[in-house]
Length: 110
Image (cartoon, rainbow, N blue to C red; front, side, top):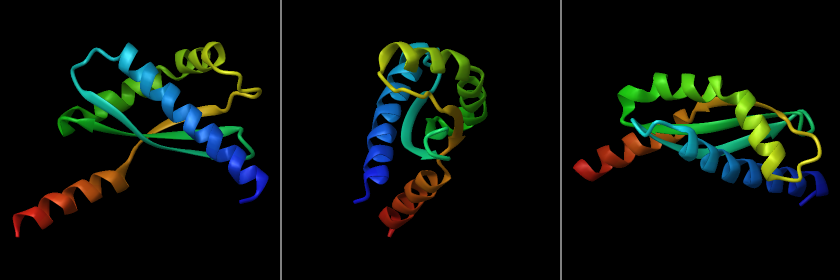
């Protein structure tokens, strides 16, 4: 594994853990927000944090909340990690995980 790929993987794991803790602490608990994946790109300058939300009808509200909290999350990362350059964070719904869950439900019906 190239050094950069290993570095990105460690950074992704750290951001995933920090995002999960931050969202759990800051959310109003009307929905369950789970961090499923993180993608780091542009040499660590940007990161997309993928989430799933239960119940599904709260997805838009939870995604809006996460996006509004980007500046606070950035400060959280600064104070809870030793990441040299903090990436720009974006939040997105994990549509791949959502599709996988639907396929699981459908396969269990047979």
